Amino acid sequence: MGKKYDNEFKSMILDLSKSGIRTKQLSEEYGVHTSVINRWKQEYDLKGGDFSKNEPKSKEHQELIALKKELRDVKMERDNLKKGGEHLFQERQIRYNFILSNKNTYPVEKMCKCMKVSKNAYYHWLKTKDTLKVNSSKSFLKDRIEAIFDNSKQIYGSYRIQKQLEREKLFYSRSYVGLLMKEMGLRSVLNKKFVVTTDSNHSLKTAKNELDRDFTSFSLGYKLVSDITYIRVNQQWNYLTTIMDLADRKIIGWSLSEDMTTENTVLKAWVDARRNRVINQQCIFHSDRGVQYASNRITNMFFFNQKVIQSMSRKGNCWDNAVAESFFKTIKYEWINRFKYTSYNQLYKSIDQYLNWYNTQRLHSSLGYMTPLEKELQLKGFINKAA
Image (cartoon, rainbow, N blue to C red; front, side, top):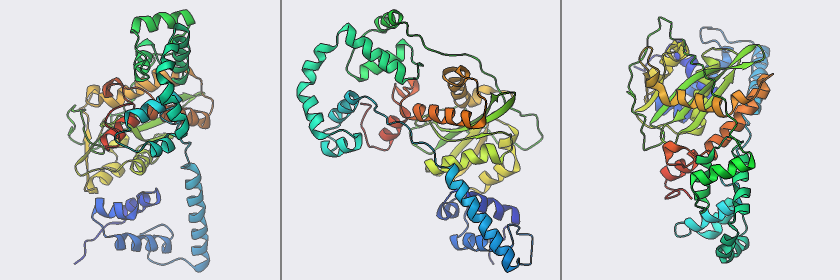
């Protein structure tokens, strides 16, 4: 006899499906055959979005539902079109160095195409690069420091600028870089305000701490950490939810909402993460004990998912989710607290801009001063080391 599913479970599966997760993925993770999910979709449309109703709607009502569904799909496609991040390698010299470092692994012609540089320009640089090093004078170095500083959105201090210069084969001490920055009047624009926002004052059931502060991960899609923070917009709060993969420290999913509902915070961020990253068997999803993560909607979603193990911090112990909280300190310290936001759209665009830079260009000390994108490529076997 076939397994029976309640209406709440069916609705959860269809919500995830409408959010963009493929039917095949849902079938694998929740143990429901694809034909069953497809039948639920038809049943859902016939019953006007309510599984508890027995009688199908009239033909006119069904057409109205179909039109509303089409409108929702169009809006979803529009809202999910995010701006593409800036390319990992902004400076031409860095692109050339990357190609040179990997010429024994990949064809030069294909790398040039991928890096958006001409093959002739690369070979010209290759012939003249030694003579170009003569230009590494104080004036040239100042130009590079200023360019790196501006490209970092005026965030980098002398230490990260020195690390970036090393990637460009320019080797100078941190103290000398700091001295030149002082001469040029370059000072990192940072703000140290940060507020912890967890609301764990609830009676909902919480998960065991499966992560147990083991923040190391050597494969993508095995350990994910998440958190929610408040951001002021005029006299109101907006709420940023993020999901990070510990393997490459990349923000693989996020959402910005004007309320603290589970649907608009954790659920939206999870759906975004699933679009961007494949999860593996026994994947740990760790968070604090906030009411959104402990809600029936989320705990049921993870309970029925055959690949995910939900994990939560111990009560009152912020160190159990230190990496996720550290990211919020970083984004506020480096970016958010530098501006005053007057609308949701302004804040959304600002966060989107920062996250694109953070994921593709920001050097991470925990990754050996690689970027999350470089670490991702390394873990996937596309590059042997950072360029």
